Image 1 (cartoon, rainbow, N blue to C red):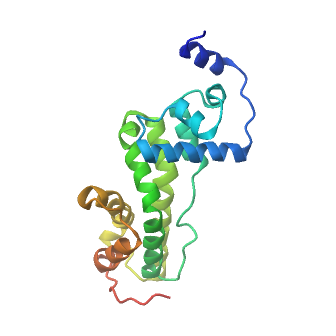
Image 2: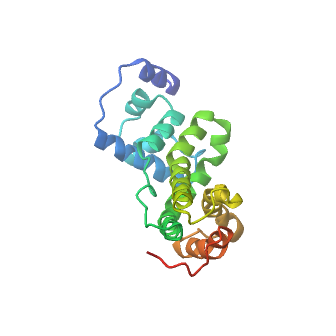
Image 3: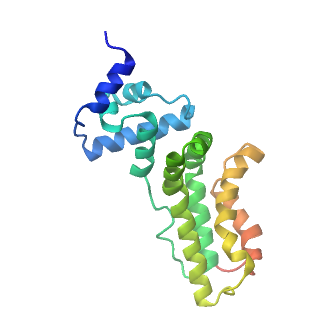
Length: 209
């Protein structure tokens, strides 16, 4: 009977089998679900194969290793959560962003926590994590701020403007550690009203469009 190492080696040198985009999405979803449930260290190719009823050799042929599969899952499920938001005012944009981020915090926060330690040991994994969950949101929030500066809502040289994304995304990550609860939509909405808007010179009662 071949050893696990020989199975993996033969899988890596074999031609990759074709997996449909739909099947790939099922596999990616299972990988991320397992990461949320048990963390990166507990994730195994065997566990993914069992969850998805996919042959372990197929996973090795297609992705080669656990890190490669996780990177592919992050890239393959990348989404633009905030890019569509444009209410006409910065206050309105940030309120909508708080709601959207808060609604996904129960899904995204456990995933970031599960991958954080491993990502610090793997530049490729860290890059995939940033590209999938962090950079798109930073870019969207920075765009909201630049639009507000162009409209004259806030000064172009306002010192706090460059830290808006760090505030909103940082508190989402920090609240579970500080209070043992996710930063849900209600919490992030209060955070925007009480912490971010005043720092930008926008009052908490700035009307929504």
